[in-house]
Length: 264
Image (cartoon, rainbow, N blue to C red; front, side, top):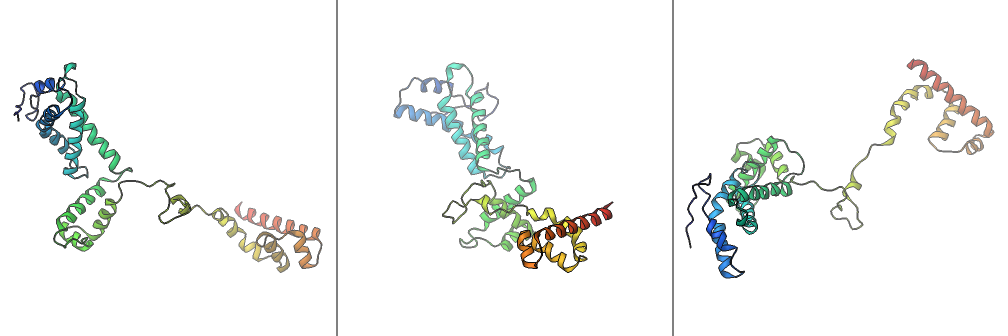
C-alpha cells in the first residue's frame, strides 16, 4: 500500500499529496483495483477528517460519533471529486465533511434552542454514566451515584438526565402512545377555560345578586344557570311568561346599574 506524504502546497500537515492517485482513480473501471485505490485515498485523508470532527467535539455529541460522520463525509468527497477541474482535493473535501457534520447536528441534535448550561449538564451526566456503567454491573446508575461521581448536585443531574432525552420535539399530530383510535398528543393538551373570561363579571355581580329578593334570585338562577326557558320558569312558579320576562329584565338592569355605578 503506498504511503502518501503531505504536499507542500497544502496548508495542513494532514493533507497528503494524492493528486496522482486521483488521476489514476478516474481512469480505472469499476472493480477490485479501483475499490482498493479508493480505500487507500480515503485512509490517507482520514487524519484530516478526524481533525475537522475535533472542531465540533464540545457541542454535545461524542467524538467517536463525530469521527464516523466525518469519515462518511470524506467518502462522499472522494467519490464526487473531479481532479479535472483543477482544484486541490482539500478545498473540496473540507466543506463537504464540515457540511456532513453540521447536517448530523441538525438532524440528530436538539430541534429547539437549549441553554448552554443545560447542554453542559447533559454532557457531564452522559460522561458520568459511561464511567459508571461497568462499576454498577450493567444497571443504570442512580441520580445520587451520578451526582457523587460528577461532583454535581442531584438537581443538576436531573436536569442533565432530562436533556439526554430532549434532542427532538414531538409533533402535536403524533399518535398518543397506547392509543388505538388515532388519539394524538394534541388531543391531551389543555386549553383555556372559556369560563375564565366571566370570572371578573361573576365576582362583580355576586353581592348584588345575593341582595335580590328570593323569588327574583331563583328566577335568574333557573334562567342563566339552569338553562330553563321563560315559559318553563313561569309554569314552575305559577306566573305568566311575560311577568317572568319583565322580572328578568328589571333584575339585570338593576344589577348592571349598581355595578357600573361602582366602577365609575
